[in-house]
Amino acid sequence: QVELVESGGGLVQAGGSLRVSCKASGIILNPNTMAWYRQAPGNERELVAAITSSGATAYAGSVKGRFTVSRDNDEMTVLLQMNSLKPDDTAVYYCNLDMRNVGGHEFWGQGTQVTVSS
Image (cartoon, rainbow, N blue to C red; front, side, top):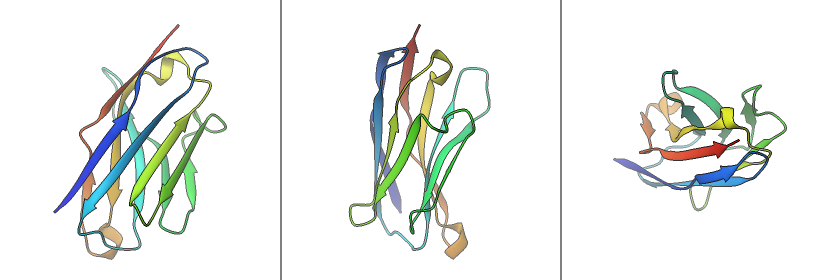
C-alpha cells in the first residue's frame, strides 16, 4: 500500500507565494509520475503540474511561468512552489502518484487547501 501525506498550503494574499509538499511512502514502483491536481468548488479536478522520475515536467497553461514542480526521488517527495498567486488558484490541491505504466496503481493524497484572497 502507498500513502501520500501532503503539507503546506494555507491562506495568502494575491501576488504572494506558497509551497505545498507531498511525501510518498510504501511500495513505490519506478518509473512513475508524481503530480499535483486541484479542485475548486463546483469545478472538476484538474491537473496543475506533473513530474516524472526522470525529471520531465508538464504544467497547466494557467500556471505556467508561476508554478514550479520538483521532486526528490530518494525521499519520494514532490514540491509545488506557487508564486504570483491569484484568487483563481484557490482550490484544494491533491498529490497524485501514478504507477500504472509499470503495473501498479494510482494513489491520491488527502488534499490541502490553498486560499488566495484578493
